[in-house]
Image (tube, rainbow, N blue to C red; front, side):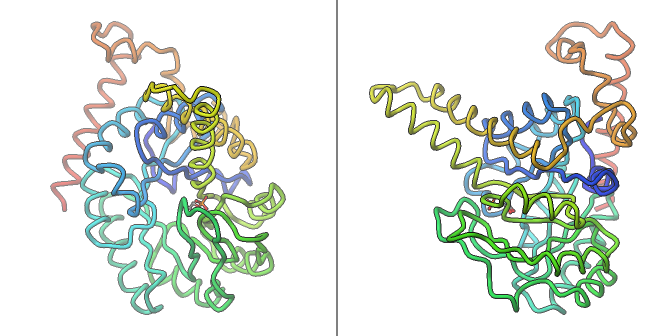
Length: 341
Ligand code: 13P
């Protein structure tokens, strides 16, 4: 089973001083591009769908496909709700079978953020789903076309508040505000590494960096060295996809092959994701010796037998039978979890 929770992958990342990329899925093209790249680089990956992107992708339609392809992947993959701000989005993601939820109460008062995040944690933990919270406010707009600036310092995460927040809510990971913003930065982002180091010292859980697009290799490196185990990255993928399409149309203005343009977009996303995986130091982490293997075991199926089997042939190898049993067990657990709700 290669579909895991956030806790499963972030524990190894924290211990091994690397970060797992959280890349936004907005359609089947981005899903395949992200997963194929992570598989080829033997890197764990987080497949995120943001509530603000529900307008592009029907959650209930795409989730069974994501679960199926992630289950067959040779690497551990997390299916994560990104910036769930409404109770409805959290419930839809849980019902659809997400393995991880981000509840973003960062626009609320501290007390209200604690109250609502605690409710989400209670509900999610009861069904084995992990939760990321946000304290302080990151700002900007994902995929925003320029001009993103981090909010003023008063909105940055404060270590003493963060300790109280984590204790009272029980979140598994915390998104921190240290000077990043979503979208394309206006000017050069300046991160508060002193604050990040203090947060890392004060908290015993993995930290999450949002607004990855536009940060330098050195920024990423210093963040990872100071406790960041999950990095969110989206706008750069969107830019690469669009640039590839533009380039194609510039060279061939009469090109009207729509799926051909989707392949161009996919290529752009793959290149970007591969580059980020290298920078996040998660490339090659899926080895038989890695602790990730204990939670995933996806690489045992790398031979391709299962793909053939699920395409219609009869089950002949032990591995095929084992996987079928695992799939039945998973499906049963899913049903039981839902009944609990
Ligand atoms: P960017 O779009 O700036 O890379 O940020 C992505 C993000 O933080 C998703 O939550």
